[in-house]
Length: 395
Image (cartoon, rainbow, N blue to C red):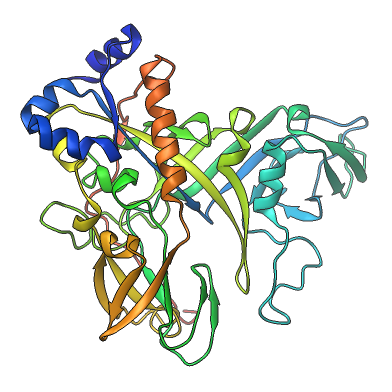
């Protein structure tokens, strides 16, 4: 048994043994579980892919004369101003003003909130346009100015739902092409898309939420952030394999971090034809090896992780709950799965290559003593199911 304090002492002294989730499986096979649990202090996990439930709070400081912004746009992308005078929230999926969206489907969605966030972190100069109804204390009614991230007092990424524990494999059983947040799906099951780093993914390496919880320090696009709550749609009560791995979506994380410390290559605006805008985010999470059971769960392999194949032409949008079959991430990463005796090409919206890069960057930070671990102040709920929207008539 180890404690967080003991592991952090080893990190501080430069003696911590840190392996990535990609490395730990072979290491345990070689050393044995108990011996490896004594030696290894931290296993680093990571993921990189589109995470629509992302965004940021920005504070501009006060203009002269002052303004209480009631409407505002950054690069013509609407931001939420229902806060204090010069605080705004920018959502990753927000469209640019005048974007035709899907008026002439499939829409192209060339620029939106995710791209603004990418440009901010890249240090680009952006336009703010704001309107106000005017007050005695905030008399200015209109403002147009240009700024960079360094001009802001705070630029804080606040993402309500990141790092889905597992997810669907999307396929299209209809006879026409469809456009979804899982990408373009060709008719008659000609292709399938998935989005997960599989055996590298944080919550698949801690499936029972033994170490990842509220307060856990994470690597968020290069900055040191933390888990501030369970993510929206978190559903710990789900079907699991014997090893505790969920066979569907399950857990999520709500993450926050300082955008001024982030690296542009790990925050990228994404356009999905016919669907909209998103934000690809890189996340790394360290797992402290407190005991052999925790280590064993970090040895999960792609072949042990099952994902549900779902028809996005009917069953997903109509919420029928039907699953065509379960497939392993080993099968998915091979680039081909079989549906009803037919071979189907598979693509990934997430990058295993970038996830592995993040896991190694985090491991290096820990080895240098630049990144210490934090114990959760509250656990993620394990027995909460996913609720559906209640649709009822007015009482």
